Amino acid sequence: MNRKEYTMPIIEPLVLIIEDDSPKFKAINGYLQEFMPDAQLIHASSLTSAIQVLSTKSVTLAIIDMSLPTYDAAKDRTGGGQPQGFGGIDILRFIETESPDTYGIVLTQYEEFLSSFGEPKDLDSLRKELEAKFSPYLLGVVYYSSLLGDWRTSIKELLDQSGIKI
Image (cartoon, rainbow, N blue to C red; front, side):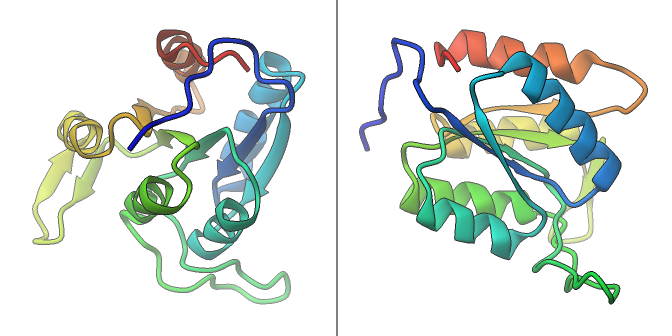
């Protein structure tokens, strides 16, 4: 499938932040407002709301959390459905088939995941698997730490390497 090549700055970039953790979302949103002042930022906090945005808007870049609830929690109730440990993979599959002009960066605060067989998988293994399966839609997988700012540099480097100018 042919991808849009962005050789000039995108005039009205739309960045979707898919994140259910409020402090992490605030940190990402604050950074992107500084780093991409011309981008319109949209927030989705579940698998369902992210797919709804990707289905109805022309998203340039999605910052994707790996572990997401199925749907948004009601403000007056707890929940959000069954957590999807690999909900980010469902988002990447959707981008690949239904939103092919969208690029994605997975930004996760977990260093280890349980496979569908209950076996641990480290972040480096997950990164290699996802990049092999979802390239060129996936620009990379980045580890998020609220204590370290390395994730900011990693996002900037991935965008610079891809040639996307937002």
